[in-house]
Length: 366
Image (cartoon, rainbow, N blue to C red; front, side, top):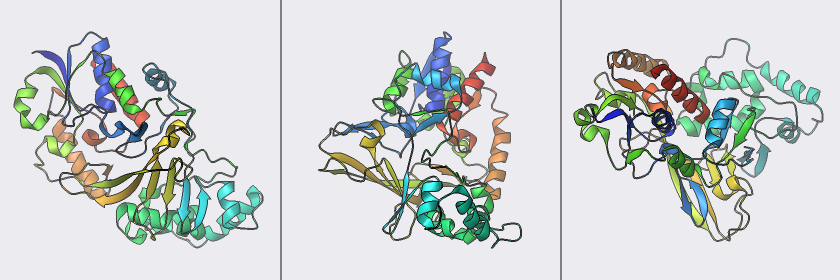
């Protein structure tokens, strides 16, 4: 064998495993079908601004070892995710906190005032919630559901909330403080210079081949290394022999505006049906850039997955989870293949959890 490990995919799982293996003296080859490394966290420079090409990514974690690990490659800034929500001509702070409640209800001045409204509205649902709408109302009441959840969720899934299962919204954070920080994690930020810089540093000294599709020569690639770390789609690896898993996708419309500031925040969620997009991302605000004379803005549209599109969100309903379990059983017979990451495991991962998972898998390898 020419290599100890062939890594299929240069996203965070593949890059982390490759880096750890390389540091342990293993011979590693990373291949990726895209023309660039970094997978969905790839950032490209447009007008001097680091643009999150595949949607906004904010790194946040409670794992000190993961935080120390990523900071060993690049410096992270102090960016704090504080999105705002817009419905029609109304603006609300996210997540749901005292700033939100005091604007929704004009008699809210204290946490007790907010709780009074929420608890009263929650009484509308008396039994076990049978759909997402009932689940949301049982957690935060109808007013917040109608303004800040319903439209966004229906656009995201292209289905009425009454037709979506309740487990999609297991819980909704209600913060009775004036704090717009979306995440509770101890560590948070964005790499100075963009995420591509982070992954390039992780892969420094490692052989990487881009524009290289594993499935064009699967047998040949399988024979090039003692082990294969596969981060692509789980069903695709098995040539969809049990059927295709379902995904939701996204479409992005990125525009350059000849102005310094477009919306005053990195992320604005659009929670109503008056527009088709769910989010507007102004990339310069991730790195506190107030000097560029132009700004780059991305309008994000949820989309049904069509062959050839990127697979962003797994559809973890009973049908797809059952099929994924069947594929996972098949994967146990692939002795020389490690399946890791969002697509290969068919599960939603935050970035820090992807890195932590790769760390744990590599420890098991050692």
